[in-house]
Each structure stands twice: as structure tokens, then as C-alpha cells.
Image (cartoon, rainbow, N blue to C red; front, side, top):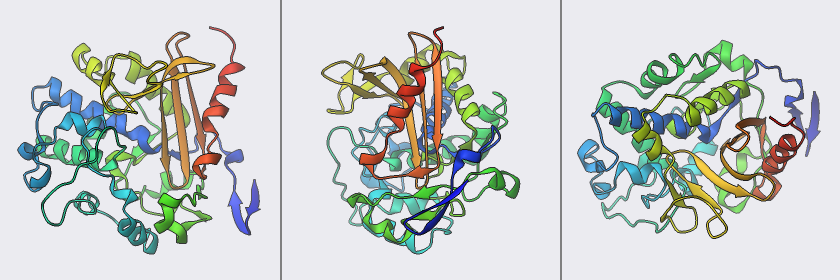
Length: 329
């Protein structure tokens, strides 16, 4: 189905099939966390290792722990909010970024880091984790991801390419539209109202570079929360929370702390749903939200082919309505 928005031709995902692919955005972070945790279980790395051990080139951050990278308490800013980086990406969205280029966008030029306080969402932490994984294994992140998660779990409709997908998968990717002119996206203004499908995904990599069908996201979520992908100790670490408000550890979300963050997974207390585990992944033109409701052992995945302004993002409301009409288990 096609229509126009502000004189821009738009191809809607209404004609999508079960084989259609979406950029799943930051749902990728759980894959990255699981890879690191499996390496920890193998005795090759520890969550409390400091960056300086594995990435000595970032001396200003040498005392930051891997754990704080994964739960967003490192204080390292996210590169994709940097105005200079945004303008560079908007000028050439086909550019193939290296991980070092992404990290370099926010690495202090004078070698003296100024850390943010509390809990702050940072894609930079997951690019650094990607670099640690590659240093520990001596392999590319893409190869480790395929060998240790995608292939063994039979996620045959899940793909990762640091730059661009191969043609057969790219053809299955639905068009995705960037409609977000919030102030923190000012540098991306030239991309407003565009179809981002042809653009390079190298700006997100281990922080958000996976492409998959919604059904494969659901399969992954089932394994992530209930499967044997991690030993008990590492699963406990994965699901140990900090408050999104304070960055301090919490046992669970509740009235005082309605949202919490683990290691690439999130928990929230929702008025109509109770306590859920979830993640909304977002790239410039796509949103994919999965939710696991432990009380009913239900998993729902919703995929949309747009990124609107924050105030117009109603994917959570849509998910709630879908759950409301599901038959009881």
C-alpha cells in the first residue's frame, strides 16, 4: 500500500508478509549482552573487568567496567546524540562506519573524560562491548554472533551485517521512514521524511544492527527469558536491574521505580499489564517492541516501519491493545 505524507511517497508495511524483515534496533543489545555473558561463563572475561584491560587505547575510560557499559551506568555519552556526528551521518548516510569512528565521536579529545551521572542511555557502551568481544575472541562480532547465537538457535530469519545486507535479505526489508524532528535530532534534519531502507546500518552495529522477522524476535525472546542460552549465574546477571531514574540497583520495578534496566533487557510496571520484561528497539525508520508477560507466559512482538516524534510513538499502546484481545492462557 502506498500513500503520501507531506508530499513524500510512502510505502506502508501493511502489505508485509511473515517473511518481511525489519531493523530491530536496540533489541540487538540483548544479543550482545548474551555473547559477553557466555564468554564470562567460559572464564574468558568478567563483568567487572575494566575497559583498560581490553581496550587500552581508550585510556580516559580505563576504569569503566564492562558491567556499567551494559546497564547504561558508565557515564559515557551516546555518540548518536552528538550534533557533529549527526550532521556527518546526514551528509552521507551511505558511509560505512568503523566501530572506532563511532566511539571516536564522543571520546574526549583532551584525554580527560567527563562522565554523565546516574542512568543514561548510551549506544557507545555497546560498541565498546562489541570491541571487547572481538578482542577476547579474536573474531569479528558478526562471526561470533552467528556461531554462538543465530545458527545454534535456528534463527533462520535473523541477519546481521555491519554495513549493508546482502541483496536477497535487503529486498525483504520493508521501507522505513524517518519522521522524527525532535530537538535532539536536529543534525539529522536533511533525512526527515525519507525512506532510510537504503542507508548504511554501520552507525549502530552491536548496539542495534540486527534485522529480523517479528516471529524470529519472538523466538529469541522466549529463549532469552526462559531458555538455556545462559547458565543460571549469567541469567541472574542479565536480569539484575538498575533504576532508570537513579542508576542504582533495584530488586524489581514498582511504584517508586516503574522502569528498570538490566544488561540489554528492561523491566517495567504497566497499569494494565503488571510487571513485564520488554524492549523497544528503534532505528531511524523502524520500531520493534517485544514484551514478555511472566504471569501469563505470553510474548508479543510488534514491528512498525517508521520513527515518529517521541510524543507520537504509540507502539506501547498498540501492544497493550493487542494483548487485551488475546485469548487467556
